[in-house]
Length: 490
Ligand SMILES: Cc1cc2nc3c(=O)[nH]c(=O)nc-3n(C[C@H](O)[C@H](O)[C@H](O)COP(=O)(O)OP(=O)(O)OC[C@H]3O[C@@H](n4cnc5c(N)ncnc54)[C@H](O)[C@@H]3O)c2cc1C
Image 1 (cartoon, rainbow, N blue to C red):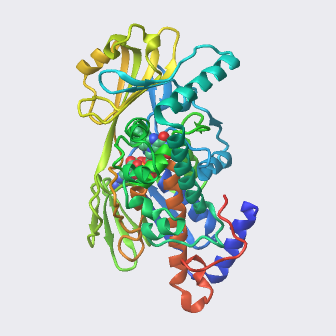
Image 2 (cartoon, rainbow, N blue to C red; image 1 turned 30 degrees about the horizontal axis):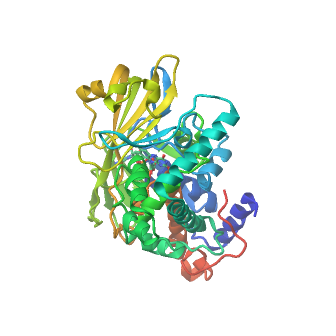
Image 3 (cartoon, protein in one colour; image 1 turned 90 degrees about the horizontal axis):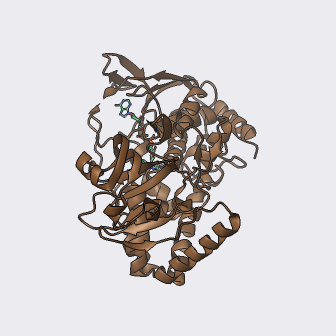
């Protein structure tokens, strides 16, 4: 259905049902999650249901974990960088905001790959510098044969089937509103899509169950989970499936930086944006929340949305909230303009070093991956991910030339477990919502958007439900209801 008609229909239904007074919504966090909540609230709600949306961002820019880094005058993605071809919200945002998708010049699937165990490359694909399509095709065929010989055709096929099945279940979150309920908990959301069981078992266990060879799990799969989540195959099967999906073909990014999705959505959602303003406490006052910021200001909001992981931020909630403890996995992203030292890898020439160096789980490995971001005339720009900060002495061993180095320590994503436990979407049973409860399932731009879309509908359904006595049809947003003909397209 045409998106405008969808929004219009939804507005019309809500208008006929909505409560007389409109609500103020405050959002804490200007990442893709917070921006998406603002966007979907505006998209789904009738004009007078929400009088104001105020968004607080502690930093001077929005985007959060979507940010670029500048090295030697050129910018590269520093955090969330690649988008899956079936990430429809990211795709729709890009079109809606007039942004341009691009295939990263050195996307992981086009790079030559080497798997480093700390002593040698246990697996290496062929590399061709030729631009001739026929040569590239031949190299690609040869690489497929090398991969099949090491990991087994059947195992690779089973791995792809597992990825496809996981993606297909996730695609249910784009179903129309007539068949997709509003979810009050992460568990319900995952169970509905058939994804919950994958969070009760580790990726390693799941892949053993589907019959993958152990060498494939210990090498290629481990390389991928280390690149995407900095963790081993002990992450949950769902986080693992999402991670593996991010290693396929057709990956893309927003030209100029993925953070523009967050800024564009905020700009077009009639949001009062407070940059450089950190919320330090949230008090429930009976009919509204009082948000206090580090600027000494207070704000009254009937609805408050937390759109940041609560694990490492210091927000005081009164009354206190209770969420399961969660550790964040820190990923140190180090950007280097220079040249890798072939001797460190037991090689003679820089050109022998694979463009993407993945690693297996081994205690003494100082990095999880190194990839070429750009090849310059005489040197390259590299991105290194590691679990610990990369000290200068170490970098001087790995690099023979180092012109510029930039380091970022990301509180990157949850440290995944199986079985996972989840914080509630509604933190206090009232109107305090938590988008990043969904991050225990998986952490990506798209999962943030999917969770945010649900939170926006949850808010609207519960605002409307307050006036249920005057509006008999208000169950349209509740979990067992349906609105025929509506879709969630943008
Ligand atoms: C190194 C790295 C690589 C990644 N790679 C990918 C990838 O390739 N593809 C992909 O899809 N995803 C990737 N991700 C994950 C993805 O970036 C995140 O899942 C997503 O951006 C999370 O968005 P969010 O809005 O939920 O949270 P955030 O982006 O963390 O936004 C939260 C915002 O809240 C602000 N904030 C926090 N506390 C307060 C406060 N008290 N008051 C006001 N503001 C506050 C923060 O400053 C921040 O801007 C990667 C992440 C990292 C770190």
